[in-house]
Length: 435
Image (cartoon, rainbow, N blue to C red; front, side, top):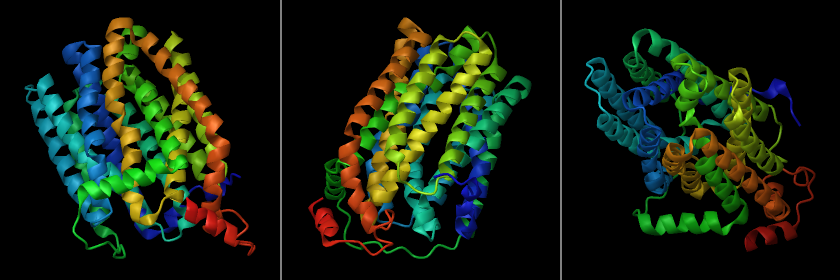
């Protein structure tokens, strides 16, 4: 089911190609800022708890505002919204740069500015997820575009932390923040250069509470969407916060510095990039349910292995393995959701995806930071990895019934061959109407 010649097929669309280049440049800056921020917090505080608090501050707005962002994404011009979010993100990075370079930065500054960026990201991430479909003319290539989005993020994740670690050790954290601010202009220019066909949106007065309820009922009333979101939320809460604790492993367990942290983050990014390219090479979305379950379990195994490793070379291999599994699970979930969702509810469903993926992470960061301060980072990750394995097993038990519910949708959309062969039946349409 994999053809590696098809990995970059979504790049034949002009709008997506422009976006891919601009976003790739910006994401390198984003990852440089992320590693600089975590190292800065730990350098100033020597506190695992504060690492968790800063992570919580930057991500909790996504959990709170993503549903509102989903409603807005279904009602307004998504490209214009993305330009606004990039301008605001540039503003935040410039403020951090100024405070660091003038040596006036304090932890409370970092928390406030992290909250501000989290507010921006709540809209940026949700709208960007929903905007992908507008750049791809042939919906059959949507899964490839989603996988390439993930590969773009993780190629930057591979380069950004490595460059950031070197820059921190040579010139300090401030330059990383400055370069991130400059990198946002690449996205702004790419969005402005696109030629996007006007999207039909309803002009009825916006009723946020009613539309939020409608989106929630739709998403959690349909078992495949519900269980994909629940597993993703568990992974984000219990597993993903291993990244927040990475500075502790780099300095206190492997006795390194910012370069060691950069290498660990880079290997995690390399694994995630490999996972994204693997998904991009797939010809079809068929079979992704099983892959979601397997990758969630393997992610838990990788975290557990990392938590007990004491040799840097082994830790680097295990974070690569965990990064691969994490990306396959998250990108596969995204692809299945985008494939089965109704178009008029896409923004709201993707807002719930954002809440599960990004929104649960702050609670996980706070929980992991607090727990690590009491029982240590290794035992904290051991608990997180075990929880991911349990979630994967429970999802596996649900797979047969989920496939039965998704199959009629895939038949009508031509993803399953019956339609191409002219065998679509009234029974299928009747099943869909009941769903």
